[in-house]
Image: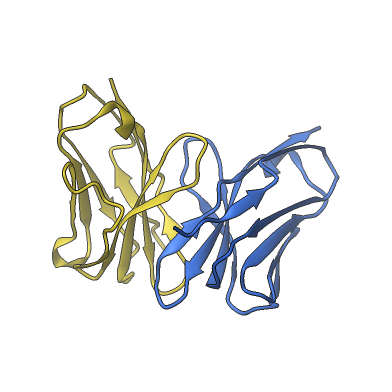
Length: 111
Length: 111
C-alpha cells in the first residue's frame, strides 16, 4: 500500500514570497491533517479535513496560511506571504479512523 | 490549551540496555499513539493504544495506556543502534480525531 506522498521535499524562499505544498493521502483515508514541526518540537496541528470539509483550523494563521482539499483527496497548503518564523517542516498525515500515518514532510527554509 | 509532557527529553544509553519514556497530561485521551522520527523523515507509527490499561507490544517495544487515561509509557528492550531517533507520543482528544503531540524524547544508543 502506498504511503502519504508529499512534494516538494525541500523548498527555499525569500521572506514575503509565496509557497505551496502538496499532499496525496493514503487511498481511502477520509481524514487529512497538516502539521507544522519546528526544529526540536513535536508536530503542531494546522488544519484537519474530513473528506473535503474543514474540521479544525483553529491554529492556522489565516492571514497568511490557506489550505484546501478539493474532491476530498489531494490537498494543498499555501503560505502567502512567508515570514522567517515559517521555517519548519510541514507534515501531512492521513487517517482512516484513529491511527495517523505521516508523509515524509516538506522542509521549508525562509531567508 | 492541552499539553503533553514527555520525558525524558533525551537519553544516552548503551547498546543492550532497556529504555523507558512516558507522557503525561492533565487532559483525558481516547487513544495514544507512539511514533519514531528519523532525521529528514516523517514520524512512523510504532504502537497504537485504544483502551485504558491496555498493554501492547510490537517486537522489542511495549506501550501502555494509563488507567487514568492521562498518561502512557513506551519501553524499548535490549536497545540496538537503529533505535536512535526521536520518539513522540500523541494523544487523541475525546470526541475528536485531533491529536496533541508530546515534545519528543531524543534517544542515542552507544555501541
